Length: 114
Image (tube, rainbow, N blue to C red; front, side):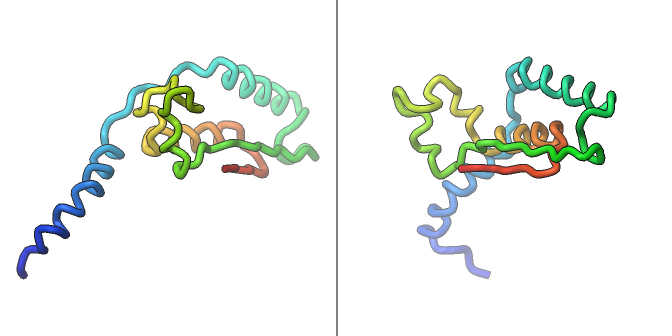
């Protein structure tokens, strides 16, 4: 088979760069002491029979996932996440941590917004 035209091969370079970035190693997330306290309180309440699935209480979690479509504004001077390293706002860095945090709360209903 003939190789693709040079223009198509060059057009694929940005996609390959995104794939390489997504596969790159990421740094450890910052400590989340508030999350640790909240999860501890939920576990203690569940162990004491006050809350959690099966106890007549519905656990609902609402979470803003920071939609990638707004990422072009995150690093702008004075922007919403201008204090944050661009590496930390990459989907490859955020999404596994988001999933782990949602699962750690063990909600009956998870509402993901934005």
